[in-house]
Every structure is written in C-alpha cells, then in structure tokens.
Image (cartoon, rainbow, N blue to C red; front, side, top):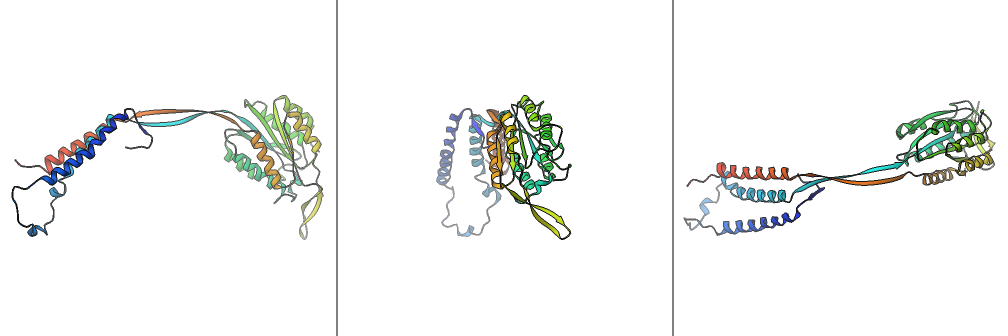
Length: 332
C-alpha cells in the first residue's frame, strides 16, 4: 500500500496519529490497574498451565482498534501516489560513418591493425550517442551502404563488426564514398547532418572527384569531418608467403591536402591520426562537437489513494468486531 512516491493533499490530518501512542499508553495503564474479584495468596499452582487461544489474543482487539484509527487518519490526509517523467524534445543529428576498407587498412602501425582500430573507435562512438540516427558506408575501389541511417545501435554495431577488407574490390574511391553518404543524408530532416570520413590513402578510383562530391555535400548542408590514418613514413604490412606471414614496410600515403579541402568546403575539420590513442581522441572531439541538444519538460501526475486506505480501515474494523464478537466473546 505504501509507496515512496506518496504525498498528502491534507498533511495536517497526520497530526491525529499522535493520538495512537497516547491511547496505547492509556490502554496499558488501564490493564495494569485492573484487579480480580477473587484474590489468591499464591499462583504457583497455575505455573505449568498453557495459555489458551483466547488468552493469547486478548490484546488483539485493542491493536486492531488502534490500527483502524491510524489507517483512517491517513485516509483523511488524502494520500496521493505521484508519478513523474520527462517529455524529451531533441534536435536530432544524422551521422554517416564513411570507413575505408582498402587492403592497406591491414597495415599494423595501429594495434592490431588500422581497420580493427577504426572499427573499435567507431563502436565506442556509436555507444556514446543517443537520439541520433547513424549509418555506415564502407568503401575501397567502390562504395556501398553497410547500414542505412538507424536508431537501432545494436544492429549498427553488429554490422560494423562484420566489416573487413576484401568486401569490395581494392582501391580508394573517396569521392564515391562521399556521394554515397550524400545519398543517405540529403533527404534528412535532421537539425544537423554530418559525415565522418576515415581513410588511409589517396583517391584513385571512382567516377566522382572528392572535391566535387564535397561541394555537393555542402549544397545539402552536410558537414564532413575527415580523418587520415597512418604513421608518417612507412608502416609494417603483413604479406602471405609460402613460408608464412612476413612483414614488409609500405609507404604511408595520406592525401592530407584533399582531406583538408573536403573539410574546409563543408565546414568540418581535418584530423591526422598516427596511433590508436590519437584516433580515440579525434572521435572523442567530434563527439563533443556534434552533440544533440535536448530540452526536457518535467511533468507529475497524481492518483488519489483515499479509497484504498479507507477500505483498509474498514477491513481492520471488521476484523476487530469479528474477533471481539466471536473469538473473545464475553458472557454477561
């Protein structure tokens, strides 16, 4: 019956509860003052007698009367059960993650390699979002949508786990990836539309030039954050040989000039990540820059509990009358 969210419409009535300890004190004093009509010099003869049910229940009517009084006083105070919540209004952000899965993403200047490091950071980024639709575009020599824009982050994370090099023909089609992202975002009604483009190479495939694609994105109000991954100089790359996996150093060739231009055209930022820690920090910064603004309107509703407490008092009263009239009935 009692709930921590209970409030009282007439709390002054609760002062009546002070009567209960006073009446209990009066009842105890009265019982102690009662004397028997027959006096005995000693009660040793009754020492082994087992108390009967009537003797055990002799105080129950008084207890039930006090309980009835207490419950009815609470009912008069009009207890009300409150519930509260929040109406959340969001200015949603639509985010398209553009992930390079070309063969060079297997280079191990990141741990365990570039593609896995990028997937891990993207997973963390997704887990930190709420109320924003996120989609995933993967690209190498071609591009395609791995996951459309969605609020179901569980599905998105599962699809992200399945990403690996070799899913499309090799190469780096940055312009096509941006164009694919534009197709995902151009009809969006979101307050803000964002792409996060991660690549480790130079555009060498596709029919769409990266800067042309960037201008199209800018036309649709899409902001692009570009991330170039790879150490400076050379990076170890695993090569399968008849004698097992061998490593050879390959040159790191990130087209920073083009990536900076893409970011500048669309009002985004360019970042260069040379290790796992730097990549995490970049995504953390983008996460801070692109946060959904939430307006919260609180509300509270009340459910009157007077009837419940009144019925409880009536039941206690009926119990007291039943015990007094049936179990502890006194003959004249």
